[in-house]
Image 1 (cartoon, rainbow, N blue to C red):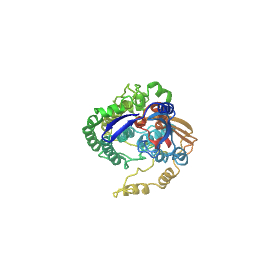
Image 2: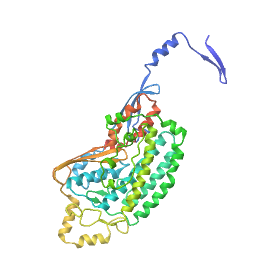
Image 3: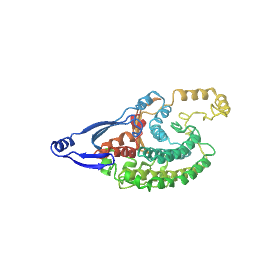
Image 4: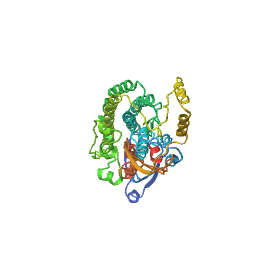
Length: 433
């Protein structure tokens, strides 16, 4: 007779012994399931597909499948002028478009052998750091959503809206700005830039401490992330991992410090690191990087109080007339039309040719990296001396960092795969590009 016990639902029998125990023992090691996590899944950051082999809840093998958002951006730039290329690369990593614009323009400027004016450099730093804040806020918000901390999601997107409103005021667009151009900027920042940015900083200073109360000090959040997605520094170096995952393993590698560009050597800020190399360390690191970025923004605003040009004076690169928006906020202003039409015919022809054909870039090739919110974003640009790139290839951090997914996930639970991928913060638009 089988053992039994009485419950509120009635008698429950426990069947054991004989063949049953042998069958269970034999089947325990063979119950393997292959599962697709994504691409149409809210926890895989867009359109990432993870193929997981499971034994129960344990992941025995994991691999990532990409390409669902492929747009051919690198190839498309070869069929556009150097300036038009900006409108393509800004659509790769759609959470950090200004970093892609800056890296691409720095590569073109290196080929041209020109240096942009100081005001343009300071404006680029301001915009990139605001963009870093908005990107990290999305990382915190989507990570919170995927792990069930929905208040973290609503708070993260609330603050991100503040950044996007500010970027819209400064550049004209919330995302995909195409505001940074080879030689400088599309146009100068608005007259009330300092006032708007300082008001934004005041809002952020009041709201950022809430994240420590809501998440950092929360035992459930801490226990959910601590010791999960472990990736030590030697694994990061072997796989080429950069950005927050590398710094969370203890290596203070940040291109803004080790290979400064756009005048970052003139700003005071720290490179946060951690030693735990887990998901919780990456969360805390991104939160601290937001504080450091706001510190840089404050310095950039003060530097921007000095007036000056925002585009190189070279007539072979810069358009003769700067674009200004009309009173209806749509077209060019009457002053702009009078200026461009009232100049000499040669000037009008030159402007037309610059816009339609573009400028020539000396033959050669360069590689220029910048520190995007996800790590080293590098542009390898080749010119054959024409008005279009011969080749544009991007070293995209989301693509490279996804290599770490199996190392972080194999041997862990399915639920921890979600936390691990969220801590990498991949953007599939950049990965597939």
